[in-house]
Length: 351
Image (cartoon, rainbow, N blue to C red; front, side, top):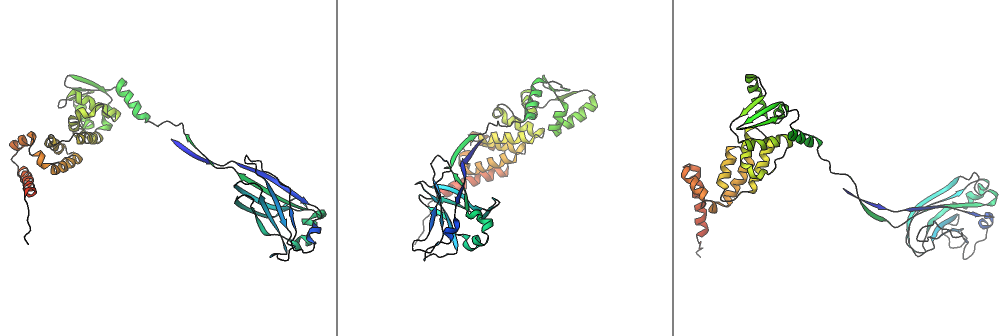
């Protein structure tokens, strides 16, 4: 499994700027240019060599929109685009943060960002012992700068989880350890575990119940299946798979139907559907019908309707036709021939 991460390393600095004799600036006369103070420059310390300063505007210009407030701005001194979080505040007499204002901003070069109405001048004067002790205003800013986002992909070292139960049963099948029953098929004997056979096949469960009550032993005889096919059935019962299933799919379909092994039956239908041709379609249709393989029967039937012209010319169809005199067979052939005649007829519209 793979995972992707988008990471942006962040850098933070806490900067404090102390302004002595703040009342001098608060009481300064109004001028044409106003009164602006700039802090010394400072850096967060990133790889892009960021640089910042704080600007305080005391609104001493005749054109000021908010003359009763001190404005505050944080300026980017570099040419770089910088993603930033910032928190403005002042420290009171107890060094507690008050007038806290925060913002997030992607700075362009030489850009300033902040608040027009940061500090109310009248409040500073009224609460000077609390807010500007000893006539000193302490302005603080906490700046967080994010590096460019880095995307990485990692592979999680987890292995695919395989069923331990399936592996354990396969080991049991191969080793035959703890076998408590023998199944006789033709001239071969197959040691097995009764409880597994009973759990997997309702038919085998019934056979064990009937024969073992009568014989009072742990042997079961099966006479109507080839030993090689039963060995593959036994392999499926223990492991849920069959090696080289395609080679014996038709016989295994019959066995799966007989012993009510529905998953094996579906596996055989899937295998046989891949081998379908015009030549073997009659055989597969008969096989599917005999063993109630509904999906295979439907698949073969659709194939025969589409390929009817080719099928009625095959050797298998002709042999089937000799052995079958059913009405369904006759109707299928008539239907096919009728469609052929229609395709060969030229239709002319008279004006």
